[in-house]
Length: 463
Image (cartoon, rainbow, N blue to C red; front, side):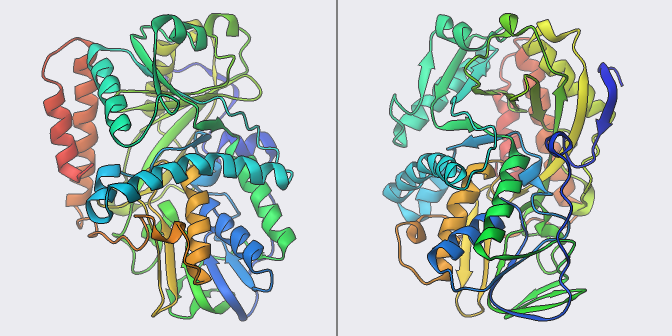
């Protein structure tokens, strides 16, 4: 490994976020059969938010949440900490079947969900290092600059106002974050930094305080009408809600529903040269590369920096503990120091990976089949920190039979075809990302017509 490693460097072991606060001691597993009103499979953000709002709306409900590891073990405790009001999918695809006005309303609900998470965190005493500093997207090549400008034009066409997103001048860019080689940037206020594991732990505590029964170390081996089956017993319930996101491929009968996409992160040791970097506003940082990155300045003055490593493991296999390949750590370090050359003498303290759920059309869904009592939510394609809150509220309304503005959003009841069988699935995903990497490399050298490579990549998997 070429990246400089700090003493005690950790690779995997869930995430730095949990290492910094301590991995929780799981609650007792399910022991015996249980009768409930609602069974929720998965104690990530989706399952926890759903349980929270269900119990708030109807305190008399008996709700049982089942989790294989501990609450927040998956993407909820490993993500980049972007509480961002970004759609979990394409506005145009949602509008195609549900109309433009519904897609516009969906975007506004996503913006509002950022503030709803902040409100609940304050109300429940969840200290998740929240800072609503907005989102800063930077372009570092002429091709990225063109995409940035085109993205803003597209966002304007979908109802984003200058107050929602704006193009920054070079001076405004430098005043926010001093990114090497930045040519253009945009900023949106609809984003907050969080420490994701703190939010997951706080939500788990909040739902238990409301009377929700949470059983960790309880893998679910079967989800069927009226029941969720585990090695320790069966939860019988009128409604069984699947909230398993990137781990959905491991659920019997759902192997090809959502592809488990890997994303990886590194975090530096605490830094003391912020005068060279800027970043005093604690904005979230992204870029306009095809093979994009995401980053935050943490509460203890590190940089947590993420991107795609090995995007997909053959046959939807999962690496539960978050181990990250050496070449991924090196690639992330190289990219980080190209953004901030002042970090060349800093060291990497932790690296980890996690999986997110990707539907075949790259658009998230929420649904409940009243005929079977089976519900689901997920497939957030990397935008789940905020989308899980909106999904949880929506799924709660559906479960209670409430006709609300949320239950008419365009992701409700959306169904798409499944992913192709292997080896086509593996070949398609890896071809897509290989082309993205090639397009980014050529853009960095000024090679023309790189957009053709990206369009081919998009067509391969429908991205």
